[in-house]
Image (cartoon, rainbow, N blue to C red; front, top):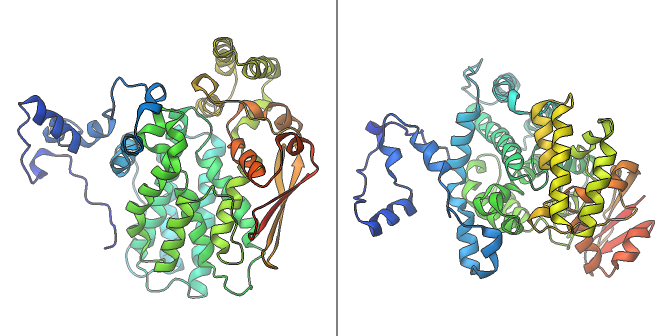
Length: 463
């Protein structure tokens, strides 16, 4: 199977099976469960969009009932089987009208690949009104850099015999997932999990892969595999439970692994079975502390990059720094968050919303800033990293067993002061420090952190 997306069937005359009788309450419940509800059979409605917008558990506050759910119920609350339906329906409704400048056909070569990129740039313009300027620039850069990676793979014959349209559909699907995660992250409003976060991961990974060229066991296809993994690793945040519930978001790895298993067939034309197994494993375990650098560098680097998320480039909250007078509001929020005064925190956040509305930032960027805060009002606890604040400015690698990855941070006074307010997965690096025997107090003041599980590579942080 090539895993191609089936033709969309919105019109009544294209439905090949009749609707199940739903006159009885029990049958109506069954029909709704399997998704064959009435709107899909009306020619006058966008049936798939209505299906995608249906609530899975209407009227239920998942955060309130989470502890009463069984593990199986928590997994079902993710409704991951609806991922493709929800993404395609959402993007179809969001996109402005656009036309692809090229018809893609024939074998993949430099000319047809360039045509693919032109088509993707035209499609990105259809969503530009929804994207902040920096997010749009990062998305365009992702497309251009992915083209360069594919060209390198073609040149060394790491990818051969692929049809141009097949590659176009693969890269287009990655772009769609980036846009969908950006829009869903804004909708969740529980920390940035969109284009900036994903491209920040890729930037750190590329700094390491640049040092692996020419080493035994390295293939340029690893860089393409890395991009596919980073686009998919946080897709679990788009699952229903993770969208509407802070506690449901803690299961995003389980949801994401199930989504990626359903999506694997799309990549069989460019990745071999070993690559696909590595990708599946990396998506499912990207937050584990063990870094098997000398056994599987792809898996180890995915995990290491995920631990470095609080220090990745393109952090959206940095845009607050340019707003005049904003620090008084952030200081107030910080004080109330640390004191656990949720009602006063919410009131201060509403006052901040008025300041954002009066700023000269674009509307999408204002929405992204609002969505970047840690979900204190939903039960998220502030995470303190002390002096560990800044951006990864240099990466080093030592493959002498068991291996060593070194990340050097550039100082950032604004992040040091306010990063507690924003969700950049700070809890993950705190957990990594704790499991490697470093106390929270020691972590906040130490000039160097040596984070290593016995028998595995070390992740060393320097500032």
